[in-house]
Length: 460
Image 1 (cartoon, rainbow, N blue to C red):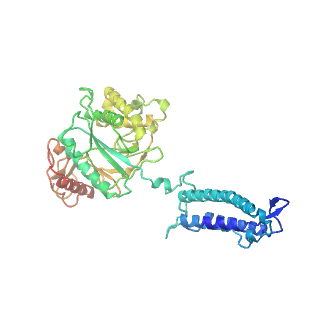
Image 2: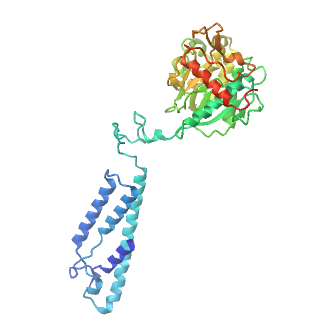
Image 3: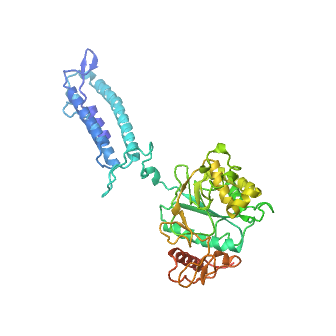
C-alpha cells in the first residue's frame, strides 16, 4: 500500500520549468488548497479515531490512522508529468529530479507517520480500560492510579498479586511435628483452593533444632541453629526470633511479604495479603496490654520513640509484614526478648507471652505499624463460629460434657486439647464433639481428622 501511494505521488507531481529552474507554478494546476484541505481532513480523522472513546482494537486504530494519513496527501486530479509542457531535452532530468524530491519528501512523511503510529500503539496498550463493565454502577476511575490510589482500592495497582511466604518455626519434638504436618496439609489445600489469584506463596518450616529430621522431604524446611545451651532459660520460645534472624539472612526468599504462623494454626480458607501501604497486618490479642505495663516497657521502648500507644497489642503471629521490614525488626526482636527474659520484673509480668511483647515493641521501635484484623484468626472454644476468619488457633483446650456444655478448667467428658498429645501423635478419626458444641470446635476436629487421614505415614 505504501509503495503504491509513493509511486502515485511520483507520477502526478505538477512541475514546470521557468528560466532554467524548476518551480511549482500556476502554469500547471497544483491544487495547493485541495492538498491542504486533504491534509487537515486526514489530521482530523487521525485525532478522532485515536483520542475518541470509541472502543476500537489497537490494530484497527493503527490501520485506520495509517490509511487516512496517507490518503490526505493523494491528488489524483493532477495530470502526470508526461502531459506538462516542457522541453523534451530536459524531460528525463526533470523526472529524475521530481522522483528524487518525492523520495525525500515522502520518506519524511513515512518516518513521521510511523513515529505517530508507534506512539499511538504504546499509549493505547498502556491505557487503562475506561469503560464500565455490564451492570456496573461504579463507573470509571476518576483518578490516575499511578498518581493517587482510589479510596476503593480497585485500581490496576492492586490487581497485581502480592505474594507472601508462610514461615512456621518449630522444634523437632513430637508435639511440634504433628501440629506442623497438619498445618502444612491445610496450607497446601487452601493455596490450591485459592486458584490463580491466590496470594499465598511458598512455605518454610524453620526447624530450630540444629539438625535435619525425617520430614525434610514432606515439608520445605530450613534448619536453624538453636540458642547456646542455657540462653533460653527453659523458655524455648526464645529460639523463635533467633531462628527468624538466621532464615532471613541465609535463605533465598522470593516473595516480598512474610506471614509468620505457628504449628497450631489450621488455615480454613485462602488468606489474602492483608498488609497495606507499608503497614503490617496482625491479629490483636486482648491480653497484650502495652498501656498497663508502660513503666516496664519503657525500659525497652524509650520515650523518644513516641507514646506507648505506638506499641500495637499483637504478637509475632499471625502477622503479615514486608520482608525488608522484618529484616530490620528480627534482630531487635531477638535482643529485646533476651533482655526481657533477663529482666526479673518483665519476666514476671509477661510470663509465657514475653516474646510476643518483645515483637510488638520491636515493630514499634522500627516504626512499622500494623492493621489490626480481628477476623485474621479465631480461638476455640471462646470464638464459637468460623465466619469470615482465616485461621483456627487451637491453643486452648476444649472440654465439654455430653450435653455440649463447656467445662473449662475441668476435664470434660469430651475433650480436645493439643497438650494431651505432647509425646505421641493424636490417633486418626478422633471422635466428634457431642451435639450443642460450637461450630468452631466441630470444624477444628473435622479438619484434624481429614488431615491425619490423608497425610501418609501418620505417626512419628
